[in-house]
Amino acid sequence: MLIRRIAAGALGLLLLAGAGLAVAEPTPARQKELVHMVRQDCGSCHGMTLQGGLGPALLPAALADKPAEGLVATIIGGRPGTAMPPWHRFLAEDEAQWIVARLMEGFPK
Image 1 (spheres, rainbow, N blue to C red):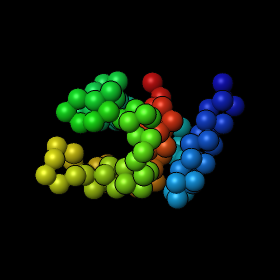
Image 2 (tube, helix red, strand yellow):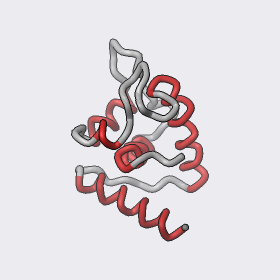
Image 3 (cartoon, rainbow, N blue to C red):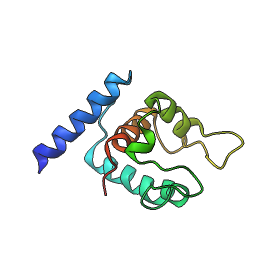
Image 4 (cartoon, rainbow, N blue to C red):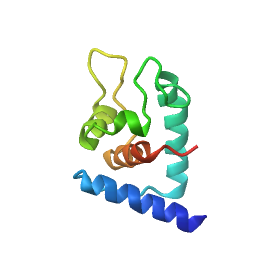
């Protein structure tokens, strides 16, 4: 199981590296916090299963044609004139990159 997690994390890093982003891996404890944040806080607008709601779906198929850098910028800076707030007070950019990598591959439960 641990080997699968490491392999999945490495794959996510490669995907973002291929998209032009170098991603630092948060500690396991921080990863757990980030997963909870996405599921609860982001899920309040994007749907608890990330299938969409007030905000668009955050599933791999919905994000496939989106540049990873743009998704990170949206998380960090928000989208003025919309309900999407900036999260820069709560996340470092490398944590937003990690979140984008996980969203693009299928977010953990």
